Every structure is written in structure tokens, then in C-alpha cells.
Image (cartoon, rainbow, N blue to C red; front, side):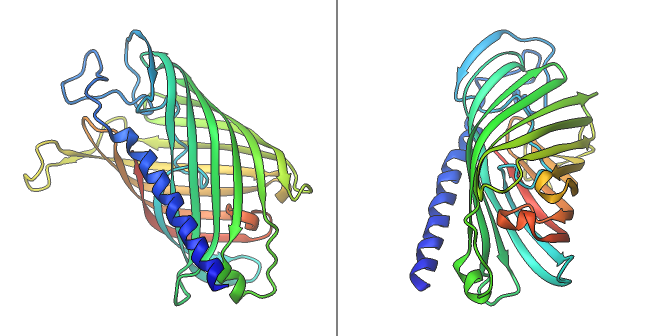
Length: 322
């Protein structure tokens, strides 16, 4: 078991380094991509902005995307560190869980007029959960995602079509401390489609469906329905120069977002994930930092626990966008 734990930890470290190398591509110098009517420090991020005009443009390795990530989706590839107080609703047990996500979309090619057009990217995501109540914070489960999303935008409408693979692995230390637990080696390929509408720059609604095309075990039902919303102020409510230390202020915007999933394998039970907090950004940068509080009610969204473990949790964490 010691050798397995050693190799498992090295696999996690290597995967995290790979995602970190890919993620900062969004934070590269963005001076070449300006809005026609913007100040010199403004950059165009089509995930959050819609210019009044623009020219037809084709670009390799775009820094932004045409579809805004689903912030409240627990399986959205993104960088986050989250603490959760989790209760198992069947066993009536409580645990402190550390949840870490590492991942992003790497834009390959886009063709657009302003923010209207399409884009093809590569997604990578790692989702790991740790039991913080154990002396060594043992790894419970880790999911690896890789796939290809195609995104589209026309005005207030946007969409994402995605094909991806997930491979899930139970931690060796967790298996060692739970001798009766059976790992099923969950893995699958899934196609999903999400359609989104932005209402007056402060409210967003989205919905769609997903279907597993290959899965192990093969008895798992295929279909998932998903919908949600995201609300934020159309303009930042506050700005700070941090006691004069910054020449370019930090902008603060409150955020409230919720994601809902109904899964066929779970008897179409509705899983709810609610996030609220503050989004911090800076003019002239693609980077964002969010401090968010979390409430989750439903089946555990990770690994093979997704069809057997009902949970309720609350917590807080930091989310990073590049």
C-alpha cells in the first residue's frame, strides 16, 4: 500500500503542475486585444463583456472564451480550494472535507466578430477530496477530466457543446481505513450541451442536458438534466487602492449563483449547489479572485459516490480564474 500511495501522490502532483502550466495562458499580455471604445487599460473578455461593434477576426490560442464558465457547477474545470462541513444523510455522520479543483479551458482557435462567433478549446480538470478529520488528511477520491468544448455566442445567447472523459480513483489511504469499501473503477465519456442567456448584464440563466456515451460500469443510466442562474451587479459596487499601494484599483462585485442537476441514475433527484460572495477583478486583467460561501444538498457529485451517497454540506472557499 505504501508504494501505491507514493505513486498516487506523484500522479496528483504531476497532473496539478500540468494544469498550472496551461492555466496562466489566460493571464498573458493582453494589450493586443482592446475594445474600440475602451481606455488603454481595458481588455475585452467575452465571458463578461459584449462590445457594441467589432471586426471579423480569426485567432489562434485566444485568451478568453465566448461562454462564461458555470461557476456553481461542482464539476466545472476551474481552480478552487474549498472547506466543507459535510453530513452524510444516510449514515448521519459528519466530516470536515477539503475539496480542491485544478483546471481550465485552453483556447485553441476562435473566429468571431467582436464577441459573436465560435471557439474550440481543450479542457482539463482535476477534482480531489480529502478527509480533514484524519491525521494525514487522507485522499478520499480524485477525478480526472479531459475533453474538447466548442463554444458559441450571438448577442445575449451563448452555448457550449462538450465531449469529455472522466476517470475516478479512490484514495489508497481511504481504502485502507475502510476495508469493506469496494472501488468500482468508475470511468465514462459524456456529451453535454448547455444554452445560456444573459439578461441586461446582471442576470444569467442556463439549461441543458448530458448523455454518457460510454461508461464503466455499463449499468449506469445515461442521462442528466442541468440548469441554473448567476446574478451579479452590472457594475462593481466598490473599488479599493489598498491604502494607496495599487495604481490600478481592485473592483468588488457581489455574486449569487446556483446550479441544479437531475440525474437519471439517482431517480431524477435534484441536486442543488448554491454559492454567494464577492468577485474581485482588476481593469486590464483577465484574472479574477472570488471568495464564496457554499451550500450543497444532494448526491455527492464526485467519483463513484455520485450514485450512492446523499450529502448536505456548507463551507467557504477561494475560486481563481485566469
